[in-house]
Image (cartoon, rainbow, N blue to C red; front, side, top):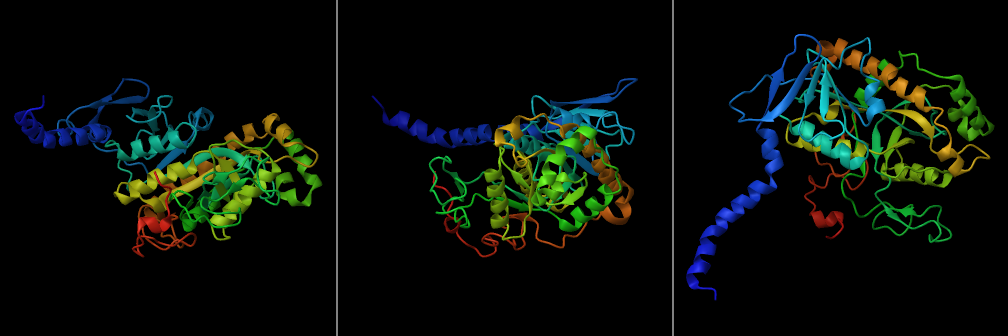
Length: 421
């Protein structure tokens, strides 16, 4: 039997239970904020820094303030930055709580001016790693430039394998409704169509907020100028494979030599191949950016990385205007004339080697350009000449795509028609 006294006791303990539930639900954030670095300095070799949970006031080492932080997504992309002549990223190796179990360390030069980490592949890994970095008390990232540097599938209408691309827009093309191609309406060109719409060409009335990000175009222009000073890698095998695309004038860019290209990137956890999907995501990129975006590269992480950095900007820990999206073409997203989509997907990765090497060759020019021009140009920031941020206007300004700034207009969240849960 439940007595009156036991009921009163439960009522008195309710505030304590509420507090405990709050603390438990936010434990990972509290742990990160209570973390400091215990630094081990061997006589020879790199500095290895392992973070331990200690009271923050007990030991608070000087924060590392990188001028440039390079984001790789997996081992080959990261390895290309190690043991290079320009700078030593393995001088300091810092284990940071929350980074990928496969890639638990951030790597920095001895003075901390340039750092690098590997997020792990896919959107979930990217978002989790980057928000853990942003919240780490070891780094001061308020003036850091972030170089997203990874390989990608490439659209032969715009660029080729080995090319280094720099994006203004990142579009989450797979965040849509989908019919199996065998079930789609016969007159539709694709089974993909925006959430809440009734056809592929309709703008999505339902938005999650991560569909499109726009980064600083003035900064992109500077990065492109730096990268164009590099001599990109190419191979005879890659040249021979590109020649298959020379048979169609539409694919003239795909048949050309590697170059530095300004064009936009598509994010999808699905690794896909084929003309129909390629054209569908070209159209999605144009649709979601109000006809401005030009799709050329496809990858699995960038919108997630940008969302994490944007949330860091909102709480004053990073500057969203200091982001560069660099992707090199490792394979074509669609077949050449006479080749099937399956043959394209399962073909030898002829362009992979040059694409990885060109991340370093083009990217190191960008890093050096920022470091060399720090006091004159980059320390105070490169003022954007365009809107920057997400599709909702979360960090201010007026998006030139989507519904506009829903916060400035004081539109209720229901007006954006988010998916019910």
